[in-house]
Length: 366
Figure 1 (cartoon, one colour):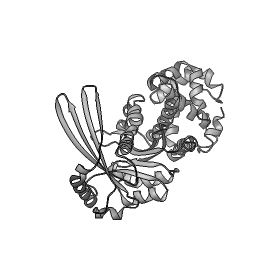
Figure 2 (cartoon, helix red, strand yellow; figure 1 turned 135 degrees about the vertical axis):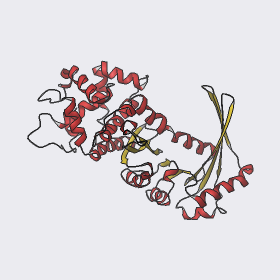
Figure 3 (cartoon, one colour; figure 1 turned 180 degrees about the vertical axis):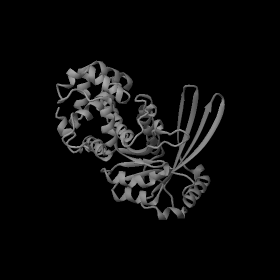
Figure 4 (cartoon, one colour; figure 1 turned 45 degrees about the horizontal axis):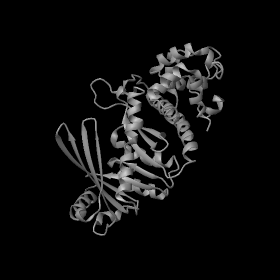
């Protein structure tokens, strides 16, 4: 494995001539640590010391294993966009071989960076998630949740989204974002809420009048003490929705009506979406809408539960963002491994089984 080639575009932030450890060694040690069930730099250091002989087979380690303080200092100073570019380029090599992909955009707070007396995390990340391939294609740090509007266009421009379906929640319901997606020869499915007053009100009124004449896709779920019924309605008749004229590519509107029964209590909710997709049935639209939540279930949940991201107390400089990139890269590697076991078990196996760790790392050579 040529790790120098893997990380060669990442600039070393340290002063030349005063470094005892190779930057490529540091990056690979941290990645291996997070594959092998470590949390934080101290655990990564302890693991690397135990596996020093194994690491010497593919790392230089001219001065042994870097201390956890060294790992921390480097990750604090490392330019985060360069590490994110590595994540994006690896994802491109995989996704470019596939078609008919759904790309999901959503943000997540790193709760471990919440400062005392504050409610909002100092580090919030918005990601592009490839649903079918189960990996993060790109990410960017934002100052607040509302800054997703500014980050989304740059993320979309950084990857090839042609022929894909881009889905996002209502924070991305902006005319400029919809136009950008169409200009890049892709389709969109975007949540619609009252942040688009005229369009939202007209869509709500339209479905109130036309719902009885539309064929719905009905689905039911039962389990874990909860029952749910969902009805999805699609309309491609937009002549009487005047506000739709200002949205590039808008071809259909979707209405989702959900009823839940939890502990004998009934809860009802309604959601609306706009889309550039035409000729898709209510069942097909329902599938896209449900798969949108894979970013929550297969990325955000695993980052929090499998990798304990919200419990990480690394807060200074670029270190939280850079570790977020490493976690997503590690998550992509273990998610794509075909072994029939939970991701948590895979991490523990990588910690015990050196051959399995090398199998995971071999996926980097796409």
